[in-house]
Each structure stands twice: as C-alpha cells, then as structure tokens.
Length: 394
Ligand SMILES: *Cc1c(COP(=O)(O)O)cnc(C)c1O
Image (cartoon, rainbow, N blue to C red):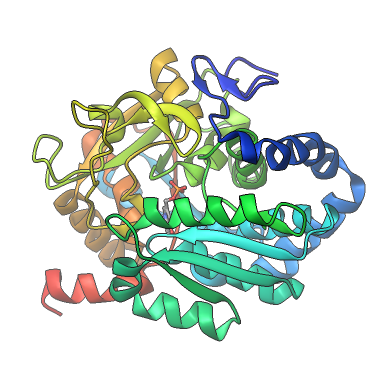
C-alpha cells in the first residue's frame, strides 16, 4: 500500500486510528476482520458491480464541458455523480456497506444524518435489500430537513430524533453509537463519509473509488491517456473527494484539489473550513483536523450547503494536507452560488451547492490551455432549489 493509504491500524501518517469506547471494540474488531476479505471476494464484486450498473446507473458520464472550457481557456471534464439514482455519490457507499452488512449476517442498519442526504441513501439501499433501517437525526435537523425526513419515512426507515445537546449531527452520532453498543450482534452501523474510526475511512474510500476508476477509463477513451492534469472535488467529510482521488494518489503528476466550505468567510466565525482553521484533535473516533475552541470543544460549523457543514474532515485528507500531496482551497457561500449559476447557464446543469464549491476552483486557479481538468459534480441541485430561489430571486 502506498504512503497515502491507511496502514494496518488505520493510520494515515499521524491521523486516523480508532479512538473508541471499550464497549465498541468487539464491533470494530469484527468489522476489521471481515471488510477486506468481503470487498475482495468475487461474490461481493459481482453483486456490487451489477447494482452499480443497473440500479445506480453507472458508469456515470464524464462530460467534456465545452462552453465552460472556452470560458476558462482550458479543458474541463465533469464527472457526473449528479446523474446517479438518488442524485449524488452517496448511494455508491450505502449500497456497498449494505452488501457488506448482509455478508456479515446483519439484518438491521443504523445511521446518523445531518442534512438527511446520507439518511436517504441509506434508507434507499435498505428498501432495496429488505433491511430494517433506523436513522438518528438531531431534532433541529428534522425540522430543517422535512423533505428528506419524508423520503426516509416513505422508504420505510424509522427516523429517531436526537434530543440532547445542540440537537444536530454530533448528537445524532452519539445516539447511533449508543445503539450500536446495545445491539452488537444483529446491527451494522453505516457511516456516510470517510470519517469515523478505522476501518470506516478506508472502507468508504474503497467503495467510492469507483469514481476515479471510471475517470481513468473514460479519460483513456477520450484523450488517449488515463491521467488528467487535475482532479477537483468538494470536501465535507471527504468521501466524493476520496473516491475522485483514489486511483490517482500515487500518480504524482495528477494534481489533487480539494475545496472546503468557507461559509461567510474563513475568518467570519461562520465557516466549515476545517483545513484552513482546524487543529489536530479527535472527532467521531478518529484523529484529524477539526474546528475547536481553546478548550477543545467542537465549534458548530456553518455553510450554505448542508452537506459540507461538518466540523472535521476525513483523516486521509488531513494526511494529504500535511504531506502536500493535495491542494486545499476554500470557497465561500457566494463563491458557490456564483459557480452554481455559471454552470447552469453555460452547460444546462444545476449542481448541488456542495458541488458548486468544487466548480468555484475554476476561478481560483489558473490552468494552461492544454490542461485536462476533471471536476466531480457530486450531486444535483434539486434539493437546493429553495436556497437558489431565495438567493437568485427566482
Ligand atoms: C454529502 C454530500 C457531500 C459531502 O460529503 P463528502 O463525504 O465530503 O463527499 C458533497 N456533495 C453532495 C451532493 C453531498 O450530498
């Protein structure tokens, strides 16, 4: 394994690991023993690939964005995760983990969700596989994200409110962990990004790696070489970025660019720019950068896009930052709105607000006319229409 992947103990340099309560150790040990043999088995690969193809609709297109390319005097290719079933990349991971759960003999899935996108992906995969599904969600988030709550319920999931603390994502996470401790034998904990204790960051990255696998094949077909000059993705926890980077990590000629959410501005106090502002700490069982106050308390993050509104970042990204392997940029709410409108008007694609952060890199960097720049459009904008209506006065 290369220096950018997890070692045996789930370390990425000084980041990662599994900082968990002792009572969770058996669950984590069990998963650790099983996940690689399952993922590498022919039976898993056959079933996973078949569902990605016929259910999710993969491979997602790699689209040469002609008008966007003309505007920025370079060659822009869009990896269209927005065209997946349920409208984003999260389904790749949800289906993969459900299949792993099934092979481990589990029949009950638990998850936590903030904006509800991961909850919907999980509830979708559970309906598909006939699994029981419980999604923990902060009570405040339940109020804010009514359409996603309705989707989860229609899909047959039980949405349980987290009533403690700020009644948001971190409180929902605590509830999910408590549930897992109480139900170690029949229950699988399905995490939605490259975060959490080892082996989750590595497992989720492997499941999202289909994105860079396809990019290489599609670039080869379109340009005669598998490697672009740049791959660019937004980062919340970092799963679509981890999938976009995966097969390029050891191709040092490919520059990796991650764009995090600056909210109202990196120094505004209303931000989710973890790499720009964070210090090393422990969150969700993993050592990584996180936004914390002087007492080590986690600071509530803010971004216009609910999916990037996370106070930490996956440990692999923290390592990519420290080693200088990836370039980290941040984009404000306004940068993202501008980029979203630009993509819509130039290419007829309304992106998710999260994805618009990645697209804003086109204005922040300079590219050569011969460069091949791949940007992952992690999701579609349907879920963000209310925000767009307000901000663009539609
Ligand atoms: C959840 C989400 C993200 C952020 O999650 P990552 O794990 O950082 O990929 C980005 N884009 C969309 C569309 C999302 O739904």
